[in-house]
Amino acid sequence: MSGLVSIAGAGDNVVDCYRSAGRMFPGGNTVNVAAFAARLGARAAYVGQVAPDSAGEHIAQSLAAEGVDVSRLRRARGRTAYCVIGHDEHGDRAFLSFDLGVSRFDPSADDIDALAGFDAVHVGATSGLDQHLEAFASATRLSYDFATRADPDHIARVGRICFLAVHSGGDLDDTAFAELLERSEASGAQWSLVTRGTRGAVLSHRGRRWSAAARTERPALDTLGAGDSFAARVLVGILRDEDPPTILAAAAEIAAETCQRLGAFGPGIPIDPTILAAGDDSPVLEPLTTKEHR
Image 1 (tube, rainbow, N blue to C red):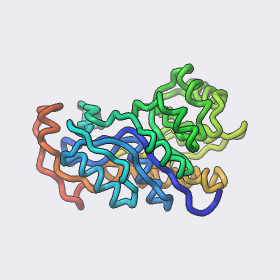
Image 2 (cartoon, helix red, strand yellow):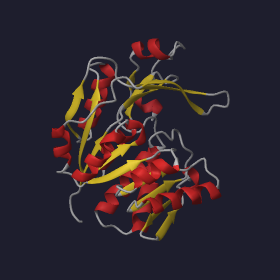
Image 3 (cartoon, rainbow, N blue to C red):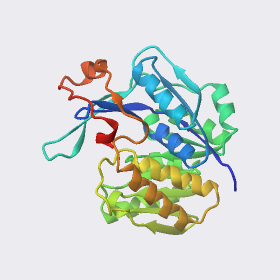
Image 4 (cartoon, one colour):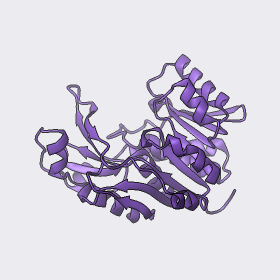
């Protein structure tokens, strides 16, 4: 496949609330992949559900600003999903609280039909859409992010219908990593990608494997979204029939760039105080300016 490719993200969304900065950013695996696919020149869309609150509108507006079609982003009464992010006693980033809000939904028959107009749909394990994966895979190519979920039965069940199976293996030793990659390949997934944080990533296809080192020249400000940007570049590259070494080198670069800012993409806006009222009662500092937090 060459020329313009098209990718739809379907599933999870969230606002990532950085308590110390007092700002919230659009996020979620499938949201991030759609946004980065658009940045990479793909025709991109997002299918999901938010609430008609400030957080939901921020997600919708940020996606639209990236050129992502949000015509299938629905609104439901309730609260948009959020995750409150802080730091532990060592200064490392920590997830303090979260709420899935209204992000879980069932795609309609029209949604499935619309996906047939895309070269691939990307879904995450945290999206709660596993019961619809067969329908997605029947409509178009399925890209699925297992995140850190390594259950053999789950990989076997989902991997067999995957065009691209994405796994996060940053916390795995070499033995566990090798077992995970072999498990993904054996599932029947056409392509398997395992990212390993600062230890790079491995991409495999039909018995061949390619690896890439991480770009660690600059210290990371925030790693949130780096894996999603890496996966988006790999998916776009595969659909464009680029050679794997080129794909991985470009993916490592975009992931490194993602680590140089807070949030995966989009502007940060002041945290909606009702979010912290519901999930975290620690004080929020004055918001940083865009220049200060990037």
